[in-house]
Image (cartoon, rainbow, N blue to C red; front, side, top):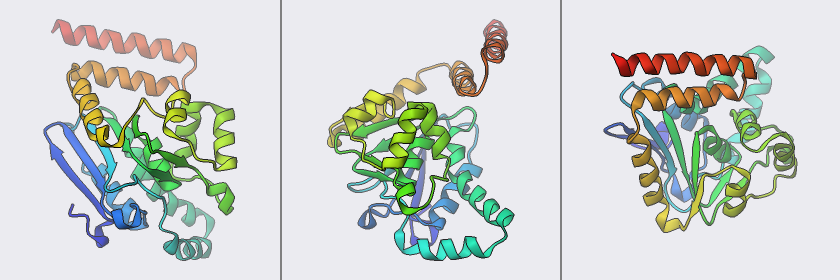
Length: 250
């Protein structure tokens, strides 16, 4: 993808087992539109088994300042004019642009600098891992606008920081900086902005050094642990280990 306006200002580039997805609207702090979500969804639909790591980044000084406010009135009018079930189906399509970042067999990393606000924060939260620059300002201000986070952000946030902290962050809409993001589990590391790409490259290399099957099974177990009870999760571990042993023994 070329990152032109009619393609949502999104560009994807594949190098071996690594797919890098870039938001390329730096003059608008990578503000998103429905075209952005359509482009992201299309990338997810074209994902093949050879991709093991997806890196999501934003060009310029900010990851993404969220929804382009200029399109909000039109979106609101469009959704309110539809029957509720059709409006929800439209949002489901937008959510698909984010949900594929946890596709089986893929580990996704968000490289986040500067502002990650609203839809930008939710795009970062949709990834498995976040490496952040020290100038991070992550916010979820939807409630202050009379709205809710609806791009898969609520489940990701609660899974990362717990219910009480998620409530506090969403209802105050306050900014989370880099040090706090690491402390509460939103980010795996914080680095100077000029080291962000190198830190993500190091993490990517570490992930690719693992046996692909073991990595896939481990990530699947960790994802299922969020929703499974202990009995279900213990069973999932047993089944995964038997599959690994048979694979290694064959």
